[in-house]
Length: 298
Image (tube, rainbow, N blue to C red; front, side, top):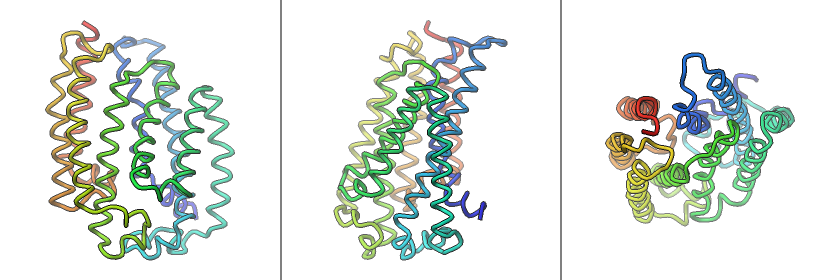
């Protein structure tokens, strides 16, 4: 039961919660000394926030699977999920949801009041998505994208640091790109049965989604480029512009995987499975951290 419960909570998708660490990474230079107690306290707090969001997002996946269990049984891949296959009973899932919420939300407020507020907003928003907003065209993808932005906000709230508005804009645009790519993958994979699995898919066409993907791609590249030389918390010598090629490669690689390889249904698995994409994201992160540490705000 515990194994099936963990599978339903989708640990592979918890990679999204790494957004929690963004605020910590972009304030690292301020506290970077070998024995800086502030740095270790901030890292420990960010890690606690990460764990809480993993539990909270896992709870939301449990609720989603409970709500979509009948539709998942008609899906060529999702029918093997524990709830859809019957390996995990509805009663067990409901009990797990109650316990997880009883633990996660109080601990979130104990960690930090504003972090608890953001975590609650994240949960309520996803609850609204599961039972209503997932059937509202375009809004459904915006809600998914807002989930990533809220993770970044939660990370900043947990360690009490401000984050650049550019960071939120870039995160939202990249998340929209991923969300529209996910919808496109579902349409291509399920074809005529798409609307039977997810009602909202009848409102989309591959052509419309391609246009939306193009708009969000171009907007993200422009926004990230502007961010690298205009954000106040970045080095004044504009060294962060050196990371633009990494951002371009990641976006182009994603476009390649979506349009040529017909992937995009599970962005987390796609990142872990595609070595060039995974390597470029790691290189992007390492380069950004190195620039912040070396140049600081000079």
